[in-house]
Length: 229
Image 1 (cartoon, rainbow, N blue to C red):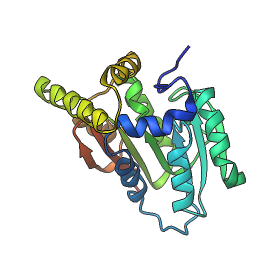
Image 2: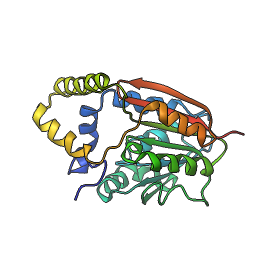
Image 3: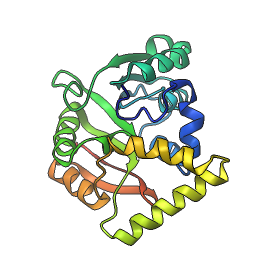
Image 4: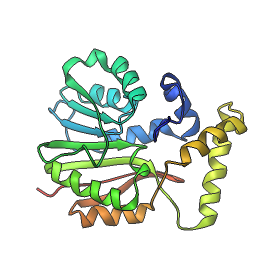
């Protein structure tokens, strides 16, 4: 049985597949990696929620060569691929199967940075708010949370516009639209995106400051905030 985020049955084709169906996927990742205030040679302690196949994890470990990452995902398929991809980083990465906000972050953890990509939108509104509270608790003072994800528009015509944009993007990548729609609609069963505005408000309610939206392309956005010093 597929789990949220398992758009493709074979996790080995997830990376090329997701690049074909998420517009500007690399740009979304780059924004997440450019957002933290730390210098590249800082020993950054990172929690990644919804690490999937470890694509963003590998980019972060390369960008910050003194960093360590706890990479969490609930999918055995995804984590199996992540273990293969991340084995060259040795003990700088710890891979753990678990869910959020149920398993991570927990009260014993302390991180300089918490990141997530295309995962938080699987949670309900209440679960997102619970997660934001837990992330705030797990961050050290001055630590950042940065999330790149699917967001929802309140205006129906903008939702329609975003759907049309994604279909055009898929066709430009050489996919058959019917094949794509079958995969995308199956993953929709697990999706519960909220508006960007609501999520920024919830971060403020969780006592983050410097809350901001960093990047947006239609219904994909990168946003985050800082735990006050």
